[in-house]
Length: 276
Picture 1 (cartoon, helix red, strand yellow):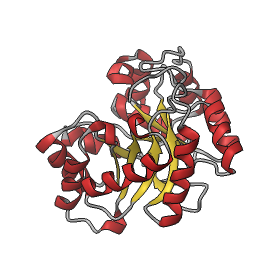
Picture 2 (cartoon, rainbow, N blue to C red):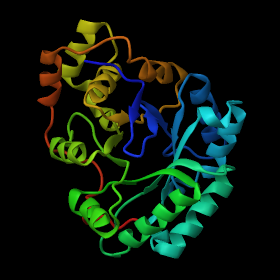
Picture 3 (cartoon, one colour):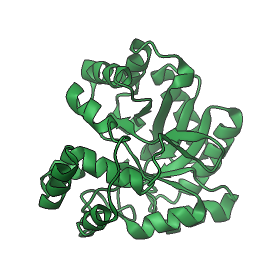
């Protein structure tokens, strides 16, 4: 199984294979933790307007001392800003809070189909990409029917779909759809609220390889071609979560991991999620 430290996006750019999530960090904790993660070697930092920590995340980016061209920064459009003009305005506001001229990846956070505005937001995001304010554009928590609506309306395929994905909910059908469309799958909650760490199967594979359960899960997701964005405030766990590129799982290991899927979603259903 080939190890990749970055994955190719369908727009010609590349995304780091493992990133750092910032929900629910706030205030000084967000700034310190983001700076610490970057110092430990992370380059992909994921935030969202809905997290209300973009200003602090931006401060962490600057505190790291890293040049802008070494960073891959993702933020997301909140539901309250769905619509063409409001999407254009929302990214400007996010950029101001982050202290950046552009983001590397801008996502629609949830489709919110009851509003019926996500296609209009997508058209605005295409314009933002053309203006250079969002270098890549994608979606989060979208189902195939939502993505098909975007493609049918614009001809533009999202570069990324960031979704709930962990051993108990590995989304094989959605991943297969993404593969056919050339969309990178990105996993939020990749460790399943931590519950996956206690799975006996994961523990057995971890002992076999002399690794932690978290490393086994993240390596398994990596071998699926999934970008994972775990969050931790522990420096030790930051290092562990990033140290998955020097070993491989066997075919038997991968089969055992796949057997853990129970279709157990832990968060909102994209077809009915109401959060703005």
